[in-house]
Length: 306
Image (cartoon, rainbow, N blue to C red; front, side, top):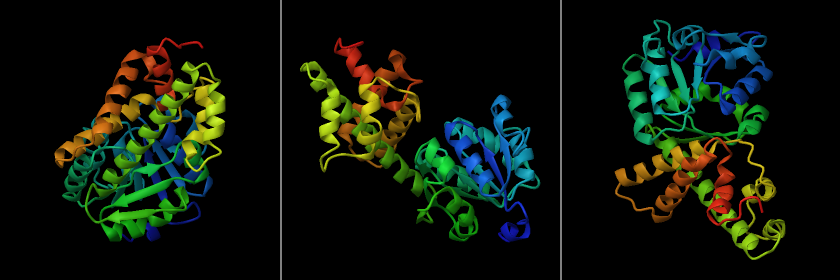
């Protein structure tokens, strides 16, 4: 079942399909093309496949993608989109020549990932949950951090492709959905840090001090983070060009809180931050970067434009 990665490897390498060409999916596709793989792409909005028409093959449906690839990586917006790609009328599960392994990089809940893996397994397909850490630039540079859960043998077969996506590939567990729990915990951490930096900027600005000073001091201390170093100056400059949309961070916070409730866990700060991101999303910041929570705080404090 898993010999295909060797059987189909040739001058252009393993045939890899990418379903979903958003910010992250596009970055992954570019990376795999640049590392010599024979790449197929599919996106529900076909216009997004245009930039790949010269360097990759474009599939008209998930079935066509699956029928022509050894490994399919899915990275779409939410569980509804995942189900459509897998189980819709033209879904991968309907293909008579579906690949033996699918790696789903979509951020969905552990329960949703486990459901998909178990349903696909009935048709002889092993699905690995493979959420990743890192943004579009990291995806294109091969600097993502994939986290993987599922069948260990399938993981070892797909691992060479994953290692082209990132130097550090973490195998979490055989348990379906386990990697998604870790991913949600990490995104929760990011949301909390973004909110803390935003509140610091707001406090300093409200005190009549240039918030750039706050960011500079923070980044000279032990308490600095990659977020404060890379995003802090952009937040001060009101630059919220998205690397990860605020609406998607809200979705992930909702998934984190739903997962906590399913396990009887109380996460008080996560619940509060979810409400803040929901309010920001509903106030016109949904398409901005997730750090636009800072702009939302400026708005509710009457500091907009200052």
